[in-house]
Image (cartoon, rainbow, N blue to C red):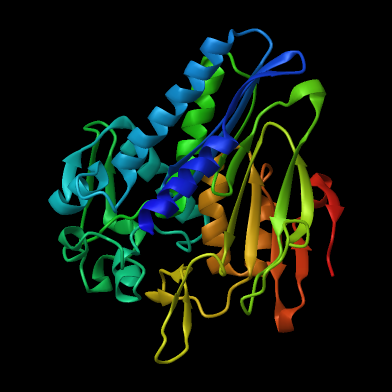
Length: 346
């Protein structure tokens, strides 16, 4: 049966891939399973040959896999795990950059976004699929939780982890990789494209100055099944913009004995999962790494503090979805409604 399921998945991926002419433009649409999700690139050009367009998209996927293997805590041989084990290491430019960006976002969110929460996630069962050789090395004590346990040295290009800190880049890596793929495509003279890494999205230009339409999902509860249209609470129109969503219904641990559900949104200041968070926060901003990380940090902050923070940032807007008593309620930062094409709040 497993073979049949894998074969079916391959057929789905093949059906999603297409390269050729669309109108007067050359098109390359490709989807691959990466980073624990599906990554899709839609690229268009009226100046490049089909061969060059296809090659650029293939190159982008190759780069995504390279960075995933460097950043993922689930790869035993990843560079981030080499740092976690050694505690002090001269690292690649990419790893230094993503950790440095993470620390800046930790500062911006008052510590609500934090890449050192691995011991808490381990204790709450979120690493069930991790190879035991790595999982067993992650400290059981939260003593090293806190972004200040990461020491950066730009001159030496080194990162030092103190107090047993252990880095997990899951809350920013997808967004960061999307940004790097976006840069690669633009370097290859491709200006019209969309990159979607499981909801971490960068919308570049689109044909005829059109906008990309991005849906914000309604909260899902009680095993409810809906069509794609029924599952959308708002449609955004975006161009040259990144968007990312963090939702408490997308990644949870369920305890069958107690019936309790634990969110993946961690409170680094209390060393435990958040019990009350919005259903989702969608962040719109110039870069996907920033949007990705802020979405997680703002979930931990809660609606009021998240909107207050967004309103102080000139290039960030957010949409907060809450689900009290099963009825969706939506709140917006000051400029967020400018991106909303349609609302379907019921």
